[in-house]
Image (cartoon, rainbow, N blue to C red):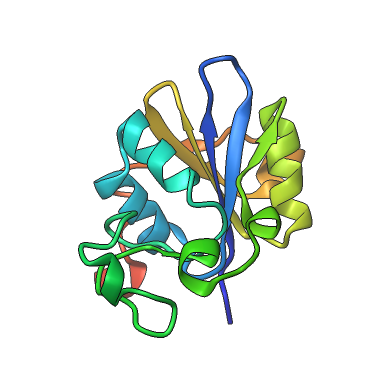
Length: 152
């Protein structure tokens, strides 16, 4: 079963852009990858520009674009619904929101269990229900992205 997430980036004009990610949305996977490989504004934007994602990888672009697709995944490369699965761009393009609350509401309505937000130069995360309940999102750190299964 999928653990869906929504990845949001704050824009310079104060609005937000977000993209859905279908697989492995929990902090020890997508959270860790965002922290390790997408912690600059440029990298975060590069990822969001892909639109909806099937799965997040260490890099947004394949090393060999001629040898990467949904059926033939290049190890470590993000799988994008439009670029790699051939889904219509209008159905998978990133979504712009006026407020972060609108973005988080969309994530909840899309069935996302986790939301990742790149704002003011760093990642934070939480759940859609955290936002509804007024709980602050936590900064994404090495400690809270550790794989609990490996720690046992």
